[in-house]
Picture 1 (cartoon, rainbow, N blue to C red):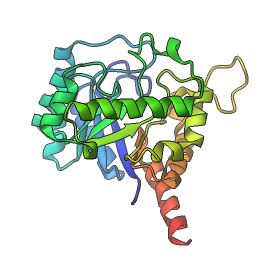
Picture 2: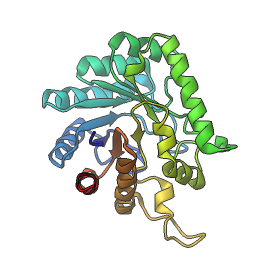
Picture 3: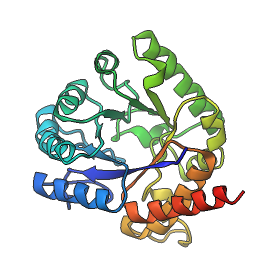
Length: 270
């Protein structure tokens, strides 16, 4: 099965990647339509920054940011995912036209999320998570990151299914960059097959992450800025495609679409 491309639509003023470029509803909608033209299979709309150190926005503000964008993109025929940790936002987003819930906390941040997702019967992306952005990097300690992440995700699956979420709704995300140091991210990327072996679709979200910005940069020097990390991101897209990932979540859609065309052509020639 072809790896899908999920285009990122950040309607936030403080995203690590695009710094509020798509903050207004009009800009967010236009950006989403542009990503569709570039070949995105779906769009992930988020109204709360989850960059390291970010402070949470209010529920009302998150709703104000995402609902008009989701409604219009869904009306345009897009398959839309809502990137949220709040059950109330997830519910209203699905009512507005979203068909996937992508929760970076895997249902841990809001005790109502499992009940809401179970009732709505939509696919649910469960990410490995160790706390909110303000403190998560202080928890980046593992005995064996691949084993620890897989064990944690398995525990989340058991808990969510116990709360009525169907196994067939679940998509797993190892959480690149969330409570992870560079070496943890590289280990997870090198062992995506182990995550795949858990038996669920896997979403890979490495796009423009800091560990890619450190590549080729001398010790002590500034990382390359996010917009200069798209070639490295496309390389990780190839790795994800070869591993059989369900989808990659990316900011620059065109480069990842091309990268996956390479994977498809090579696989077809085997």
